[in-house]
Length: 87
Image (cartoon, rainbow, N blue to C red; front, side, top):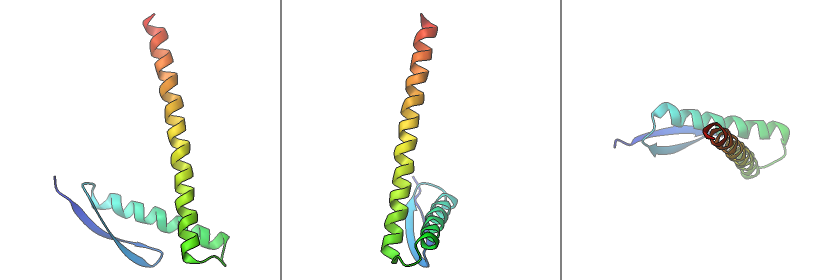
């Protein structure tokens, strides 16, 4: 397996990321995080960079938890439909 290593810019700083994904994937992640931090800066201009980063992380965590719950709900719905179709 080939590892790709790229540097992404987030909040004006470079961060090196490595993994099997294509470089474009890492750049996309960096852009998403950079955008979310910038949005937090606009909403809370007096906040410090650490608070903006934590707010962005919490926002992404909230989206992840919601997406996992929705995926579980859809899996259960699919299982119920599959079970009833087999009967």
